[in-house]
Image (cartoon, rainbow, N blue to C red):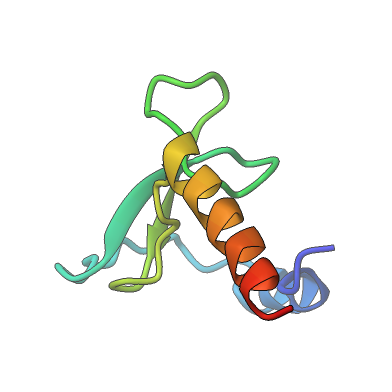
Length: 83
């Protein structure tokens, strides 16, 4: 369950009858395409992609398979070096 869900009914009632308002998005906000099921970054052309807003520097990091493999190798190399 999303963390915001318990408060959502309260907010719906609080703003009932009020007209929707547009607000300016701060220039520092970053927008990233993500997979809604996993929350991981994806291509903007991916099926079912969602564009989400993030505070500066908090967006998902795009990682390649080579980056992930390098981290795995580093982990096992560190484990062997400490024995």
